[in-house]
Length: 147
Image (cartoon, rainbow, N blue to C red):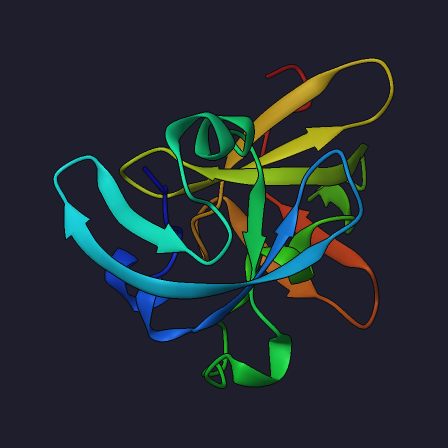
């Protein structure tokens, strides 16, 4: 079972070459076939012949070559572009850097770490997220530093 962060999730099946990133060095695999199910995507990958091999891939991240992804409109971002950006609030309190994002079901959530604590900030533009400046390495948020 594969969890897809594409919108819609089945879009991941359009890409025939996947990069698997786990504990080992990234490796390219070929998607042979796949289908959507109620719990995610069911896929067959070249070289993954049985359940034991498939189970060993649990937790592995799937990536697609960037040049294959569709261009984004103004104000849209790929999650990978947000990871690592510094986050400050409207009072310039430094929250740390975006470690990763996850989908809460309602919206994406920024996971921000500064070495001492972790903050979860909903990625809702013009509400909690005031601005994103990828070139400037900065996300400005409207968020209380005590949360």
